[in-house]
Image (tube, rainbow, N blue to C red; front, side, top):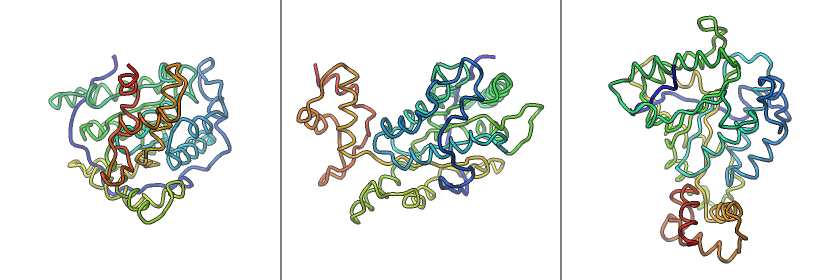
Length: 319
């Protein structure tokens, strides 16, 4: 069958541990092993580009970049993983979660998000009706089973996870768990990525607290936001169904920090170059102040919407 549709619903996860980058998988030096396992003709020709891509393009997200690179490298350097790699990205809108997933894909599959082995779902668009949750669940199970049978290294990306119905996630949990085979199919080399805004506000507050305490952003480590993210992930993950325990299947809960004015300036410069314009620093700084709302009001430190609306507002500003 075709790609399933999607559904709204409250989401919650329970008793989740946030794994450090050195946790479940051994860290490797690069992502070269990605390319010996992807079907012939489908692999990206950029076997050492992931580190540079994440560092250059994932603006202001040094924690996420490090954890993602370590998680992906360790997983793909393991010829016999015991389960699929499951990543969960948490943070406010516009902080780079979607971009990070696209960069991962680009460094594995030559066609990036257009690869037939990459499957993207938006919880609101694809699963819109709560009354059809059982249909969605069945279709999604069929879709995952069929595509992993076709390619063991298939990737599945779920956006707006915080709006996905618990029953749907219950339905796909077995594919992400420790199973040698499920109905004759091995899912151990597949990758699942979940994107959600849950935790964004608490991560933002935690970042502000660290800043006011005199800690530089670049000095922040995963440990500094782990407690804050844990509390929100616990709330986010309290399923009415006791069948689903996210801590059993998610390997890395990855925080995306709120973006500051300096990062908005970088975003604007990147967009201007993409538009064929020559960035002027003074003009860029002026735009950074005009097209983005910052908080707190007296400090104007953090962008409310990250870089999400920079491109559209920039085009309007340039008219």
